[in-house]
Length: 243
Length: 243
Image 1 (cartoon, chains in turn green, brown):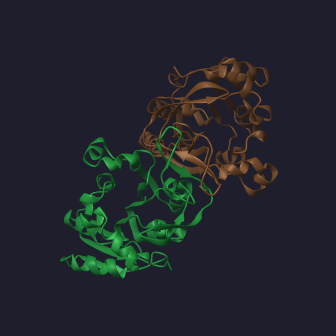
Image 2 (spheres, chains in turn orange, purple):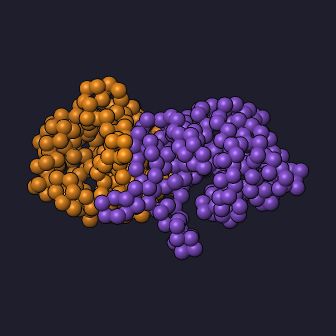
């Protein structure tokens, strides 16, 4: 079972105060890039894996999705998502992505934001998602970028010229990474970019688009702290199709 | 025109002494991984872009390629490759990949090792390669990994625990990088992994396999210095098909 850090009170208290939780998609800098990767939603049956407070689930339904079936491991998340949603076509369920089985060919689009790096068995997850999509269905997901996740101690350092610099080590050594984020010992699973892509290709997906999120000039002008995201990618956004 | 650093005497003198130049493919740690990505060669018309001394060109011909048409910007390289080859089905030509035009649908396989990162206009090159391949043709190439290339001063540093660490900065700022390697001011062009892959996808290629070269346990046992390659990928190996 994946670690359920989101129901840890210290973690949940801090996490809930992030701009992307308080403001939803407007507080999520990578959202315009994700939105540009999504297929048309009208009439689609959508699954949202790791839905959090349900911001994207509700947005996809507003864009015309016929239904959004949303999953999260966290009881706190599901409770708040349910409380914030008044739409019977959106349903929220507790589920562990290590073991979740979705109905075969049950969805036109499977969406997931910043969740799969908590899952140890990505082979199984990719196969399950492949089976759960109809032919011609889409998978759009984001994860923490392996450049961001690889190092034993991932944090900003300063190079000899005073430039913000990100350390990379252990990149080819895949597996568990424990970091401190709102609480101690948050468990994530580092995979190389090659492993993530090759796993999806072997499962039968075609890669449509890759985005290593970088803020636009306009975003940096509005929020100067985002400039550091130009130094190293924190997130990897992928759009794939099941032929 | 691309910088012709390989005909700089200081550069050429140092470069010629690298194990991969003295020993050929046996001195090239990533060669087994490349070989595993190559399609069957029997009867194939092959182009080798950036052939250097022609080690891979000769190997591909020995494996049954009908012809290997090899290109390099360096006069020194072409002269030595020609002198080391006694096979009329392998021809060597000087060419700048910024402007080279190959015959349309003229090749079954286009191969390139550690060359495309010297090319500024990758859009043009990808389109030209796409046109030069037959339907069902393969493109297999290696480049310096963008993690390796991105930083202003790419070199090993040591983290707070004494681990070898590679600095990443400026990752999303694409374009020229000048480094010192045997001589001063070697010019390369940094592109994000997303740009490289998206350019190829837009050109019409399907991605078959991605490899961020890491040495095997056996390779490290035989050559312990290779262990550092586990810390960050130096090379990106890609295999693609034109449908």
